Image (cartoon, rainbow, N blue to C red; front, side):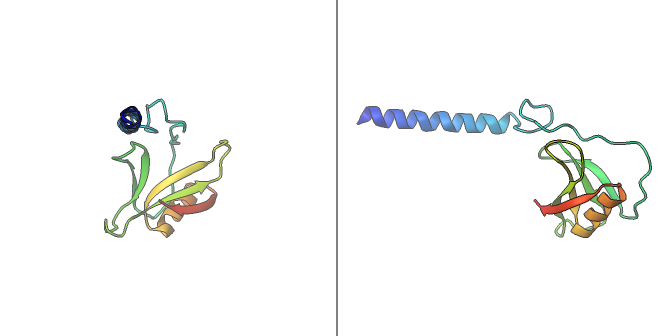
Length: 119
């Protein structure tokens, strides 16, 4: 019985170590080996939008995010905007703000919006 208990404890300990290592190593963060998505491209030019915004680097996963300015931090929601593109896995734009303003930013950027999903 002690051998079975030792095996289970060792198995669980190994699982926990792998889980923690994966989280620390930055699974999916830019620059990590597990990031399968290409870095977003920024095109030079002027965008005609009256929605005040800025592009910021997210503190958690180090990816670019559109941040709508002038909104109360308690009312901000994160939206994933699925836009039309030729990439096989699809293209998404991440936006922190109201759903209507995030849609307007995407449309003002000449993107065709397929859908908008909450975080």
